Image (cartoon, rainbow, N blue to C red; front, side, top):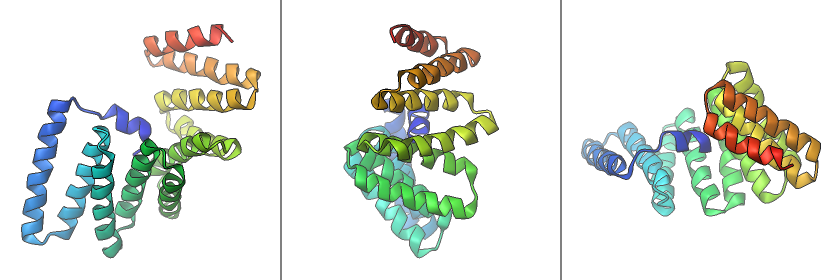
Length: 209
């Protein structure tokens, strides 16, 4: 899961209300049965819901409870997922040092498991965190790692977003040539996947450079 994926799977508030009630009921059942695996799942899903609703304190609480169970069960995949969820909550709150710590934990686990699908999201989120902290070299390194995986696996929509973020990094460095180069690449990628509105909006910004 990464910041882009969270945005893509966001539901209307009415749907999120239904999902929240669904997982609260599921959690009560899991608690009654003493089903630790089920409880961790339900806490994690509730964390996702609260993150989408920007209820960040509740999201942190749910992810932390899921993390405690997954760590006790030595469930590495679950632990990495919960760390990333916590990282996203901290990132949204502007607590960048805490976000970095959580994303680094998730990254180490996913690298050990050699799970590229999960790694690209963690790399992207770390890149975003470093950019917000002004650590542009680290931000560039992480975004490029995420971009390399997505180019290789054909996720062109994500590649486009990564090109936009790289452009922002070069903008902050004052490198107008690379800034324009990556934003123009993003325009072409958005066009290739039919995201005309995104392409037109970004092209208008490129034309002003």
